[in-house]
Length: 138
Image 1 (tube, helix red, strand yellow):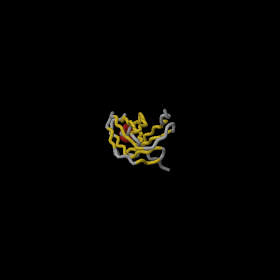
Image 2: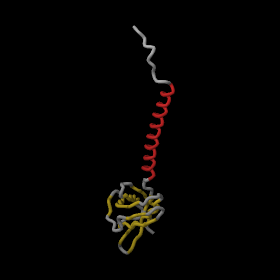
Image 3: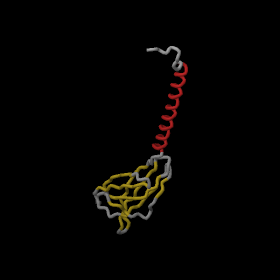
Image 4: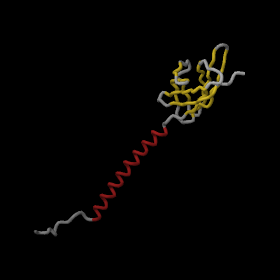
């Protein structure tokens, strides 16, 4: 068997240059992917229901909801639920701007001393919840 001594492989310098080029290309691809993830997470809606007030006006009862947008993007509330039941609310859809507070009145026949869970759902499908007890009768 004859051994070929005259053929040469890649020189170590060329191999190093190729290795560095591949490493840089992979690094750029990973950085672009991570940047896209960062933009996805920062666009998440950030809002809170900060208060529920149980109001009686004549014979009609309301739950007044205070919602605060703590994020940098507007949040549009499209649905309101009380204790798992979707409510028809005349003030919807309601857009809450960045760092803004808005109020929403939900007509609901609440009873003194009972727990009520209010859920507001945004147009993007995010839910914001708060549970409070209606005031006891005087």
